Length: 246
Image 1 (cartoon, rainbow, N blue to C red):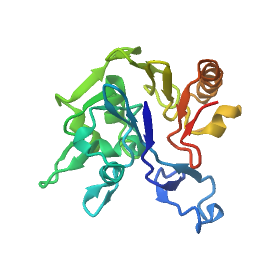
Image 2: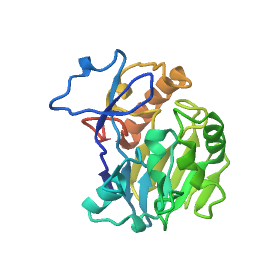
Image 3: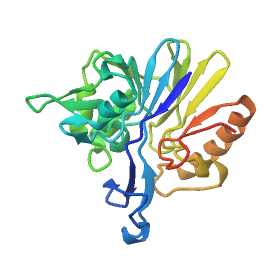
Image 4: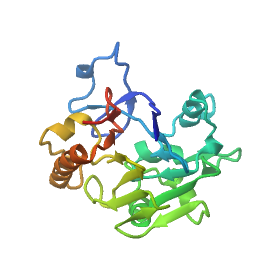
């Protein structure tokens, strides 16, 4: 399998939950509000024998009236229409902004016209009910009653015989993680349960998680299992290490 990170850049985020671009060379973290976190926003393309997978969809920012994630795909030689499956860990705005885009009339439509979107139904219901600032309900509303969407209703299961998913309820109440298994390879995407390499190595409980203790325990479990089974880890919010194998 081929893994391609689609970096959208570095950002700081504080209690306002607004993502502010951060220049790693020139900006100073100390000048941002107290408690600001420095994160990457980084969807992934995984090319398998069956699919071109997009895992999470970025912030949904546009440049020159085009989604940044579309521009990033074209920069690596892929067209948005070539994506066959979109796997969503959860629908927080920094992960789900790029699932849809505005048409000429200002209405939101799904951004990947030939892809099947795999979304936890309970996550969508929760996100729609909770709304701003964590969720952008206008953007995710394009999923509703759409034939491109495959709603996942089980706590765990298998997609197309090789993509395994499981609800953890750790970072958010209906957050899910993925294992992509092909031949002798296993790719693991932990979303915001396991967003950065450093968090895998340390006992760390984050206040921003729905169940921080469970996140910590799962990271320890996955780190050990990944070492034993030779997983490749994908880290959505890691500035330096988007892909890692122990």
